[in-house]
Image (cartoon, rainbow, N blue to C red; front, side):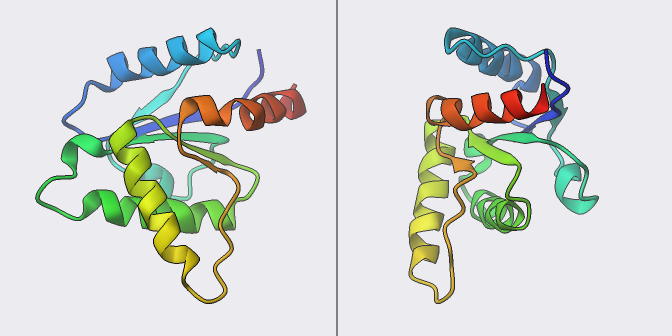
Length: 137
């Protein structure tokens, strides 16, 4: 078991503990075992530049009627560009769609290089996550 720090950043409408168990189960089904995930419904990882290796993200439940999901997608993209050794993994279809749309939008910006450390689903993260685990062992 490696000493990788995982954070699950989720909207306060969800049950972070149950959702983190679901993330662990999905990863286990893909032959990846993780010990613990720190839960955050406030983006401490962003404000304090708290160290982590992997950020799981789901803000779909709070997307309606505000721009929080869009804002957090933008912040995650900036953070991913600045911290290319970290992984950012979307955990819900709605959040994945929002991130995909934001990345597509930014692709049209001059000088934007799409970060390769953002994964639009847990399943799409397997190769990068296994590589990170191997490096940390």
